[in-house]
Image (cartoon, rainbow, N blue to C red; front, side):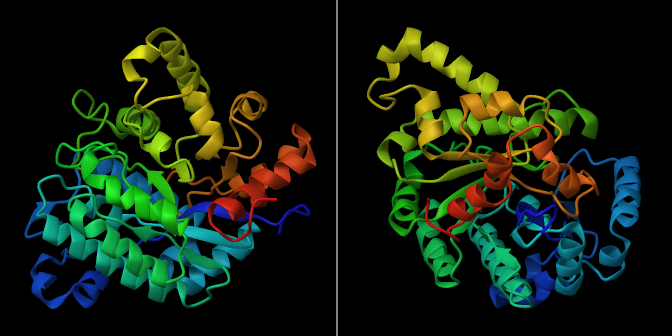
Length: 363
């Protein structure tokens, strides 16, 4: 709690210890366990990560979270960091697993094994203090026919959310018919979908065909891949067919949605006849009905986002402990009542996340 507000961190991360893959991968896949430098059989799992970015990133992380870094980002240090920042509950997304599930050339069987290994490890990680540490299951898009079985396994953990990449995988967008059973089961079980991008991956990524610096790649990938993921879900009819499906767009700010929904509505006004079988109302109406988005508390247009997207659709995430995480981000969020009403701040910091992540029913 901070400034009188209970706080849910809707987007926290782990640094998975390299040694865990050898331990948690099933026997027939142990040969693919990444080396300590996070290469698989000598091949990198990322691209366009310069030595300067690695060096400066490590410095920023060590400066911001020295205890966590020296403790190997283990569960006790994660809990300690949350308490120090004033966070009551955090929902945890991957770091290295995000890249491992983003290698387009990877065998579907191997990608599925990485997802299962990560989910088992995260279950154990969160068991240290489950009232604070909450797992978000990882789903591999490489093997559509296995997605439902892993979803059911994750649901048995008691988790109410799973994580997907927004990028195309093996040529399939999120609207591909191969994923239809998965969407149906998520809706049936009330499982939310957290869509989270990650720069430097080995998947088709906006900007990666023309830029090389992290400055450019990170600027492009997070908002632009989310924009196209949302478009795929709308244009492909996923949100039309599954009106109770809950979708969240993470770690890209909310400003892109203001523009993108205006743009899509404008296009729909002119071209609705082209997509009328799959898109039966304005894109912004789908978003306000069933989508959520993580804000950055420094964004200067939050009042406009509340007006256009809705006060029930915004929530807060810290991005702990990544190099982009700002140590004062929670304090900044708790001070939003200097520009927004306390009731709206309460929604952003707790109520909306609690509903999306299945902690509470909608008021």
